[in-house]
Length: 92
Image 1 (spheres, helix red, strand yellow):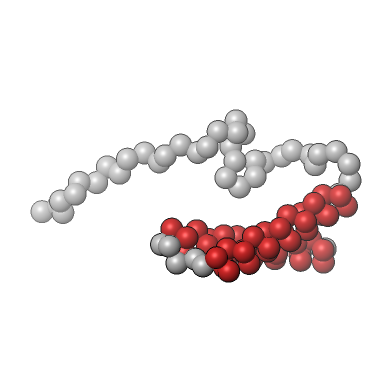
Image 2 (cartoon, helix red, strand yellow):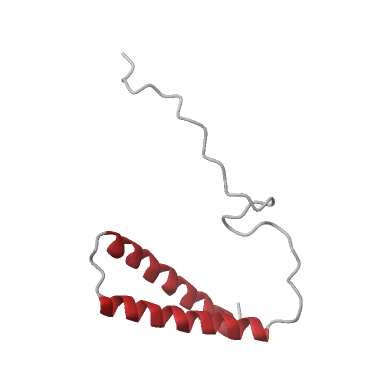
């Protein structure tokens, strides 16, 4: 990966971690108004970085190949795994 791509990838991961922590804290009512505003600012900066990155890419869509992570070719969400065949009681 080139340097700008690497920096954006790191920024995206940091955004992912921020959202993960925020979701947990907000769900437990432990996220202050200041934390909400800071997270919103970081997400605004991340959105701007993504827009800038998009502007630097060649025009048109990238060639399609394998589906991206979490996405099926049909665009539908993944189905649930089959139920577990194990009994709740130990063998004996």
